[in-house]
Length: 155
Image (cartoon, rainbow, N blue to C red; front, side, top):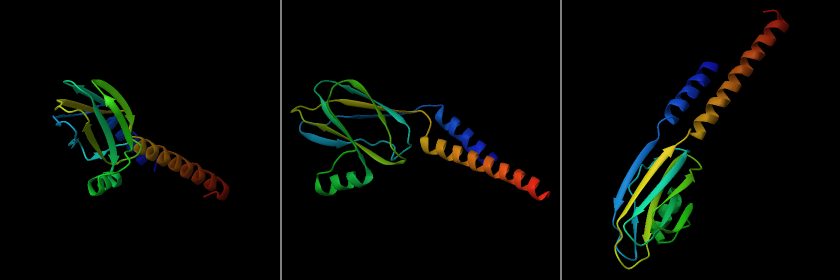
């Protein structure tokens, strides 16, 4: 179990070192909402969202799967995170857990806006980090208990 914990730790480090970058371009017309096509499964990492606009401002909403489905079905949903009145700027966001997330852009202005959004995922995946630590602790505890029981029962 210690070796599995070490293996998962190594995997976590190898997956966490390179940043993953996804870029999307769109031009939502005035008073419209557009969905970005980004990776569907987001790991629980940090994400830097860089927004580049040709003019105007947008709202950026991040939805988890159930709320996105509600948005599509009824037209109303509560976003996981909402950034209003964005111009060209950079936002940092922490993804709470591994899952499907959707980015929706709202153009509240009257003219079409040219938007480029760059998502940069960086840092270690928290769920893999916790798993590797749990396996290491469990493996070390099992090994120590085994050594202790071996001495007590003189096996």
